[in-house]
Image (tube, rainbow, N blue to C red; front, top):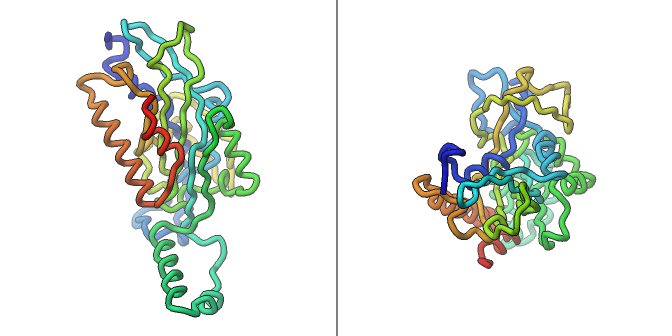
Length: 299
């Protein structure tokens, strides 16, 4: 396969680069940070950078409407752009603070037996470890019965407004989302290219604790959800973005050598990202429908 046109970048890397969301950073004054988790190290810092969940979903606006274009090098050196539509596959939102202060009297009243007391203590330890569950959703319908990611988020946010208003600093490190990417068409249109039917499942953290370094961007993308919330605005230097690359990955119908390139470590990377996704789900005791399907169906 010719690789000169893409500078040695594999099609797998092209997919990851083309579908990784990035958000504009915002700054939270240190005086507002008293209630943040003790995991935050604020010594010597005047502010903490964060992003709004609403800004994250805005990144999926065009992708949800038209698909995300992924440049792909076909066998023989031809080039095509494969478009993928994102669907919300799963999400768990854990907050650092409980929605309302728990009633100590209620807990004492419930603790009428050793078994109940033990369950309450286990629940308390879980909250201390991963935070307080605000919302979770796992898609189980077929791809043909789903609506694109942004549409789904807006639908869910009618009952759970925090989905579009939470700051990343308000979320515990256990908060995450998974996006299922299904192919819709490619340009230029050719007869069916079997290897372009591959589907991807990406996993992303939603907490600021796992932010990658801020990148410079040549584009000035507008933000809408949460813009100006609490009087705070995105950085004046609009080119600065916080990327949220996947920490986990699963694939379906990935076969042949079209998506991977010898000498790039693609196969090892796929194995590592798959293992990370599996470990994450096991730690949180999550049964993720799409992950199970992707990893047990090989046709």
